[in-house]
Amino acid sequence: MVPLSHYLILSAVLFSIGALGVLIRRNAIVVFMCVEIMLNAVNISLIAFDNHLNQHDGQIFSFMVMCVAAAEVSVGLAIVIALFRNRPTVNLDEFNLMKW
Image (cartoon, rainbow, N blue to C red; front, side, top):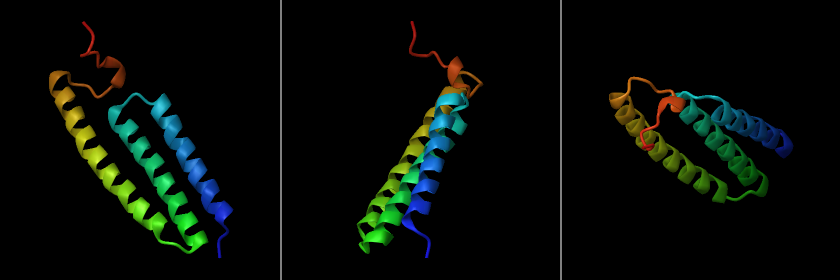
């Protein structure tokens, strides 16, 4: 049996890697992947607490997080494709469409 602290440490490390990737990287696709890593870290902690407390609420919330992640990916990829059509780059520093 793996203790709860191991799962929480893994979740914290994954969340930190994802947050660092969002802050450091400038490629839109990589930023979306880092957000997915952060969401998966939250899923790990939800399932770990669910297993530790012998309840099923964590699995339900984890499923909801996966649904939100799927919607986020589809909308985000559509936005990236629309921006790529105007400017042939996915670098977030070069998108200044909202500026006058």
